[in-house]
Length: 449
Image 1: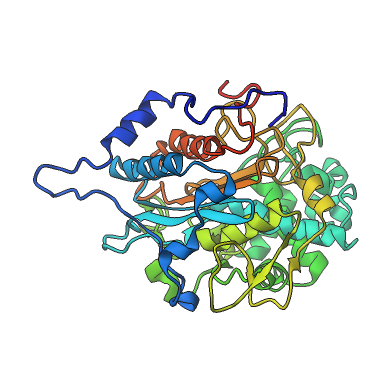
Image 2: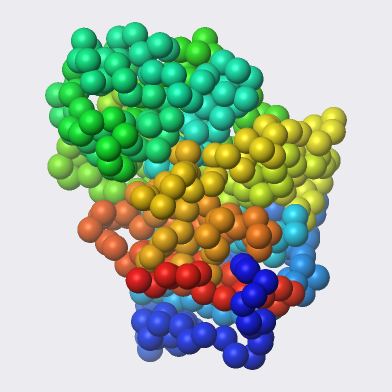
């Protein structure tokens, strides 16, 4: 936030929306007959660090310039949202100054059991795949000189244009900015399956607008980038990311196509009565990613709040994270078991990919930035960056506040018609930013409009 803004007094916080106050006020009010027990939160130590007390996962918020009472209020809002059926459960990671002030699970998986959500519950990340996976892979390959953003896509994927002249002009940068001229979505899953069929469908798909002429968020562009990463690296997308990103960072639970053994701690998503005919659990929710085989550039990734706290710490730290013991979980996100600090890419690369491209759109390279009624809320600044996922997931990072928030929910369980997560997510981000007391925090210009 700009230094010219007023210093916010910790006792004069902006009022929250009435709906949020109602949610917070309802927390703790159980049913008269006890049939609807209040949601609870738990902080569970991961299996490799069972000897560490749960409260050691978090530092005292006051030690990193945050107000403990407002973070406690945030807990109440999450629990109330679960009681009000915004989502069956949630996992939350909040970090500041390289330390965790929240790493918690709230509520239940929503699979018909009493299994609680923990920081190591796996969630279907949906479109967070685009940034945690695909965009990061592109940035790594570009930094190595193996991808040039302003080269045509067909210089890497000759088949992609399908002989259509305007597609031959589309660049890698335009795919990242969602300015390739591609439509948002195609329901190809109703007719085709397999990676090769999807390559053919992408090749045959005409552009709807001239390249670079308008910004339209597109799954098809991210799909294309996934194929591009595989072509350039010589590895399948999931293997490249596992070997080059997740394993070096110690993100042990970040996977495409999670093994069946992980199902008991994986949050289910939608009851699919239209196409698959079952409650989607342990396989990707996105239909096109499912039809492709579970690995795609636009969706398919599963991860945990713990793992994503490491990724977020890497991004806010300019592309690097410190190391820590593989058997003792520290109260800061770190690359467990690495021999030294792990650098994924240079600070300049992080800055380039997360900076808004121009005033015409909120888009950065792959990432989004806050504008208007952003999912980031009103207090993440102009230089913040983040992304959301259809299943109810989000990650927002503000380097100027030295703050990150990872919020994972399965709000589509049992139905995607539930939209109550939208104001809830904004409130979580607002409360996290408003809890900062060691620097000025004020609403972003144009926020809330």
